[in-house]
Length: 186
Image (tube, rainbow, N blue to C red; front, side):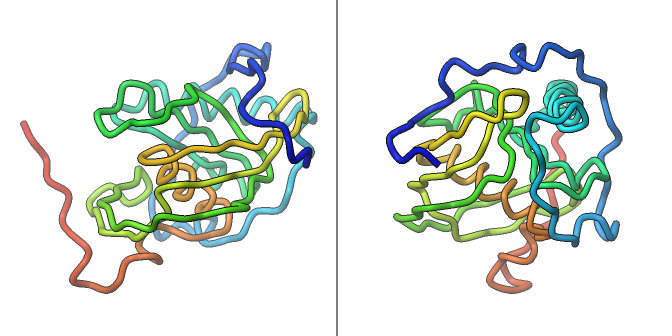
């Protein structure tokens, strides 16, 4: 990674230049959700199509702020995040997809409630870093990214990186006392 590079460099989902399709989202205990995904070639046609599909599936899923490849049945280190407009958003980089992402710095740990499309009936309290530095690559171009973020976006990134490593938020809760039935408001 290039240590001085910060941000997405003007990358947007439209950069992918392929239309995304909507994929079915898997629910636990589907075995794909528990597999660590391999690194990918971010310039491959297959990864570009997957990236476009992740963005489109997120867009049609109410309340979704992130979606990882394992959640749509693909064991790979690829995920999408978009916290734009979320009431807990502090730093917002818009809609983006990262490949082969890894956390290089994590500080200011705080507990917070999380939910997941792959665990639709539960939420849980998870301790995550509220300041984060992540490095990865952009799909399509393969350009390296060093993303610095905080707050809710940092939480979303860690949640999706966990998915790519075969972990659910349930693997991060302190115990059964920190898991809750999801509330449904009509």
